[in-house]
Length: 426
Ligand SMILES: [Zn+2]
Image 1: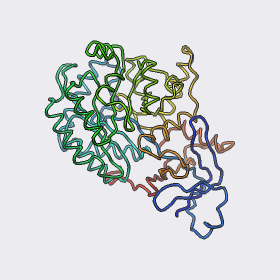
Image 2: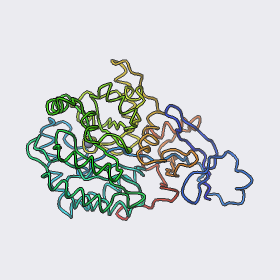
Image 3: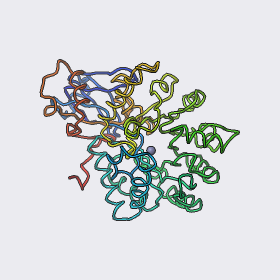
Image 4: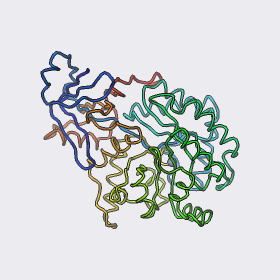
């Protein structure tokens, strides 16, 4: 048993309210799971040494629900370009460069460092279509001590000009990666990652559904981002009409902890299906606002339907994987939307839940300090970033979130073990 004492322990076991413990102990079993939070240690634990974190605050670690590794070098670039130019001048060239070993090795290493810095102990990463880049990401991640779902992106139709890969190569390379990495490592697993329905052939989707079901793998895909792609799906599948029906048809929707990204134009039926099947809706607020090309779905709409929700960075649609900033953006976006749509803005507790336990749902028991959950945690030291003494612990924590400075994260834990800094930390 390991015991940590901190001035504050904060988490959100339920979606809409913080649970706050002042001067509390978190007890962690040898297997890395939380035994419990105690204001006073029980008699049976008094002889166990305590790691005192002093005035610091302990919170569950973050999950980034969606990022494109190949686009990491473009974060912060081109958000004043038309979307088509952003794709042709930045995104596609970046994905082509990511096929070069020297480049993908450096980019993958930077991604792991950025996640470590930002306290993202769990990430779902969509790689490019390239086999070598994806394999390299797996290898580097397995060494990192953190958790991820990684998938080679599948995209074999020339819907936007040229197909990124042929159907045969897409199937062959996915199969090789699945055979090598699926269900082999407790921290890093494969996620089936079709780019989205308009760029995937029927044959490819049939194969991906089959492989997801055979190996019980999650499926993480973009869906219904805007009117243009929704129309393409309707035309191509007149009998099915919606993304939800197409994904269900190819067994790419549900079954295992799966997720749909963006889904701005989800129909009521699709939202009901997601709630029923436990599909996680991943909203990437910075990406939506940086790109500014689509009307975003109010996150409250999905929550009201009982859909499990999470947050993602969607780099390089979005400019940052700083989860504090992403939480703030989700709050701000919801406040603006509430001015002209009948949806209540999100609360701070809700966005914190989405950044921790909400996204953690994809990985199992993580994102909360409830008994039985993995001790995946961050230690926050706000002494440098918050010069004014806050009235209480909750005020302190609010200020930390809005200061959005990841340098306040002084320790990171994954499954009870401290995660060391990546070797390339600059
Ligand atoms: Zn994306």
